[in-house]
Amino acid sequence: MTTRLRPLSDADLDAVFRWERDPAAVAMAAFTRADPDDRPASDEHYARVRSDPANLLLVVEEDGELVGTASSFTMEGDREISYWIDPARWGRGIASRAVALLLEADTTRPLHARVAAHNLASAAVLRKAGFREVGAERSWAAGLGREVDERIHRLD
Image (cartoon, one colour):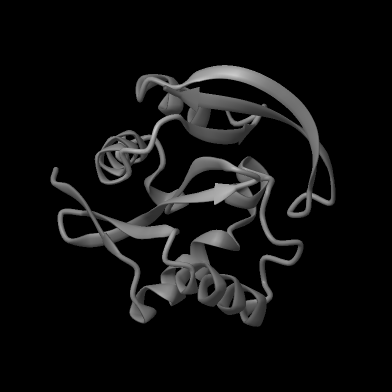
């Protein structure tokens, strides 16, 4: 399997929207838009993210096929990463390969990542990439409409 990252294009947005509204994926990620079915809100989000040159927004391709996104951005003074893999492809190591490539693309250190405490697979991806848990908090998860325990990870 060959995994690569490339910049997000307008042609990718339909697939990204489809993945980000999958109920199982929203439940796992938790920290999503309040209404995952709101396409205008999705498009507005990606337009805003893409307009900031400090943001790195990439898509993940596996053997030439679009399978996810990977990004880095600055939030509250910390450089953070995030990723989203097509739920139909979970459990195949794609997230681990994508994060490894993202860490080559963004060499800022430290890097941070946040994960819902119940998302054990994502926490495992971060540990495999060298992140360590450095904190926890309870935060509002708009996608679930309630507070959720969140783990904060850091890569030095």
